[in-house]
Every structure is written in structure tokens, then in C-alpha cells.
Image 1 (tube, helix red, strand yellow):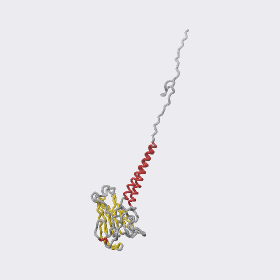
Image 2 (image 1 turned 60 degrees about the vertical axis):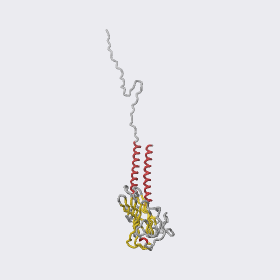
Image 3 (image 1 turned 60 degrees about the horizontal axis):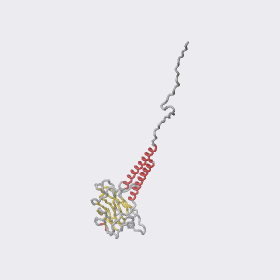
Length: 308
């Protein structure tokens, strides 16, 4: 009897599934690396933007302040050289051209009629014609023992062709007057400024009791007391004082060119040193430019630190 055997297929052991990182046999599979997005310097850039914006804001504020401060101080004003009672003084009027498109062609100063002067002399300006005009006083006024019925009313400088005070420029016009009234008196000198385009600016507004400056203030001079043994004839002036006293009725002559009165005082040759509006204008300008420079320096420093 023959015995038959049947062969059963032999199952092979299961092979584990190789993942995508499986490599050739004998090599250790590599771990998958996850890439992270690169960090951007958001914080530094944001801080830089904030710093620049703040600096630009400060610069804009400084520019607005400077623009607002300068026009307010760019008025016609007068500087008096030792204005003491009974003495003579050189009065220097500083006239800036505020127009951007026209020049100053004429300047006229009105002298006080309630406190007239025995002697008035105008300093010539190259390229300008000067005229001194008298007028009858509303009522006779006693000045140092002299009764005046007429006195100098206006002094006017008119530019020759091509000699105007251009935009952004200024000119100074001076007169010598004598004698000044009692100490404590405030003298007003309204001025008229004429431009080449025909516009006329009248600097004639009085300052109210509140002290708030009007838009077009009239130039004023405060007379001080004479010091004992002092020189009442402009001791601080670089020009020669008047020589010779005015005689009674000496102001009753016709309008002239340069001076009126019996005094033969010399013409002033240099501007008087003073401490009023011009110094304040230059001080405000310097302060404003200093502030702008500080802001610009801050911007440069912020940018340098940001780059570092």
C-alpha cells in the first residue's frame, strides 16, 4: 500500500512595511526634519518705525512753532539810545519786509505831537531819499522854555529805483531827536510801510492795558530818568551829540531834507545799540533752529542704533 503525502505551502514570515524614510537594508532610517519659518526682526523694525515717527512728529511740531513764532516778532520796532529826560537820543527803526513777493519801497514815521521835539535830524540811507516834514501843532506846547506852534510831524524815506528792501531782508532808519520829555513818558511812533505792489501796512495799534501785543503794534519808547552827573545826550551812542542849543521858534521852518531846528548836530553814522525787538527776534530764531537741530540729531542717532 502506498502512502501519499500532500505538501502544504509554508507561509513565510511577515515582513514589516517600510515607511517613506526606510532605506536600504543595514542603514538606520533618518528622522523627518520639520522646517520652521525664519524669524523676522519684527520687534526691531517696529521700534525703528516708532522712533522715526516720533522724531518726525517732533520735527513737525518744531517747524510749526518756529513758523508761528517768527512772524509774530517780525514787526517794525524802534531802539532808543539812552532815552533819558531832557537829553537827546538816536532812535533806530528796524523795518523787515514780511511780503514774499514784494519789496519795501517807502517808510514813514510819525512823531508825537503831544511831546514835540525842538531838534530832529534824519540819518541818510544809501539809495533812499529822506524828507522831514513839519505841521502846525493842535495847540502851542512849551518845550524847555520854548513855546512851539509847529514841529516835525513825519520823517519819510523813499527808495530809489532798484533800492527796495527785498523779501526776507530788513533795513534800519534812524533819527536824532532832542529834548526828550519827562521820565515815565511813553512816546509812540506810528509807522507806515509801503510795498512795491502798492500794499500799505500801518504799524499804529496801541498796546492795551492787558499787555497783549496787537497785530500791528506802534513802535514805542519809554523815557527814563536822567542820572546825577550823567550824560543826557546819548552816552552810549557811537555818533556825535548835538552841538548848540535850539533857539525859540527854531522849529517853525519849512519842511527840509535831513534835519530841522537851530541845532547843528552831526548826522549819526552808525545804528544805535539797543535791547528791544531785534534781540528777541534773533533769540527766538536761534532757539527754534536749535530745537530743529536737536530733533534731526535724534533721528540720526535712532537710525544708527537701529542699524547696529
